[in-house]
Length: 145
Image (cartoon, rainbow, N blue to C red; front, side):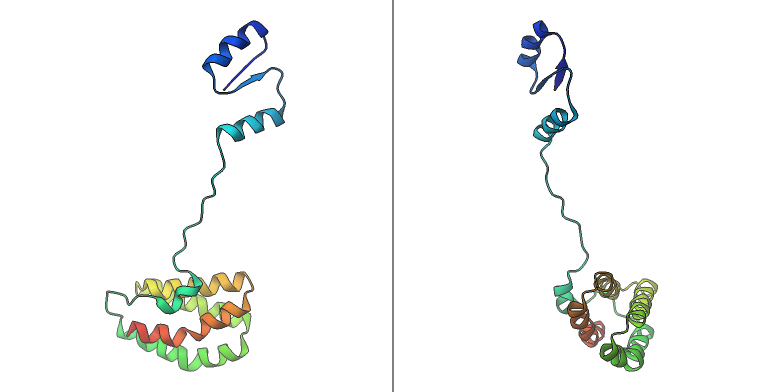
């Protein structure tokens, strides 16, 4: 792309350039030309696990720590049963953060992904998906055994 103010040079420059703008140029002209030169392509963000695929999570290859399993069973018995009925946001955040910490502590990517999914749905105030994801917690614990 080139811009020039002298008319006699315009013909020579047009022959060797893809785009030519005659000076003075405006921002609009420049932006439209750049848009032609660099077309927009949408970049999709990378996600770890789609919310709809939580139930289809693969079994992890490393055996799950018995300690982690005990904590998850305790969480299911003491916290999860009430949480799925009340859906209190503050408690859901605590539940998600606790699962995230345990996932990191015990190197369990499946648990980290589940916690991130809950966190995202909380941020988006998506109560329908959140309730469905929360209902899948016992299946998640079972898959880790």
